[in-house]
Image (cartoon, rainbow, N blue to C red; front, side):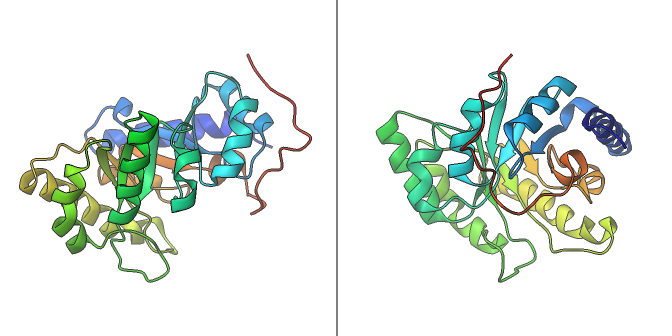
Amino acid sequence: MPTLADRFHRISQTISDASLRSGRPTESVTLIAVSKTHPPESVAEAVAAGIHLFGESRVQEAKAKIPLAPSRTRWHFIGHLQRNKVRQALPLFELFHGIDSLEIAQDINRIAAELGLFPKVLLEVNVAGESSKFGFKPVQLREQIETLISLDRIQIEGLMTIPPAAHEPEDSRRFFATLRELKNRLESEAHLPLQHLSMGMSDDFAVAIEEGATLVRVGTALFGSRSGKAWNASKADTLDD
């Protein structure tokens, strides 16, 4: 059975190959190990394999897990951020991937000012217009981008999307391309430099890289299947280096 280190090596090779096909250096793509529902022991195993950047989507789980993980880990929030969790979340994460409405951006801006923080964020775009998903519609984002830029505490670093579920990775390509084209359009129209495109997960991250992804969110291909339940911190011990 492959170890986590074996799976990481295979994922790294896929990232390298996809980067080469897209004409970019491997270093232009960053792997985010999606550790939600997995215990600190799994995070420590990943750190030992050479991974230091992890993604969580539940604030309470992350708040309990982060102090128990090796100290050199870094953390991104990759889920939908509830407005009542903003104050707890802001000190925990270096980048928020799923800022999906003007209202949550305004809440983050206000609370960040109170906490003396300047959070980095990605704007989530619902490129397929799915009613079951959060995110700005592309036209809506273009209409609201000047207001978002005017928020003086948040630092907009790029865009993020989750395409519809697909049978084949290739089926997601057009949605990734749409996000890349929107990024280019916003950079031109709003004179807003956007460093990152967060797109691609375990099944389709190679295609996402070919279409310009700089951040790929990989969980199952690295850690294995998730239970679906948040990790329980009640009996955990601190793991450190």
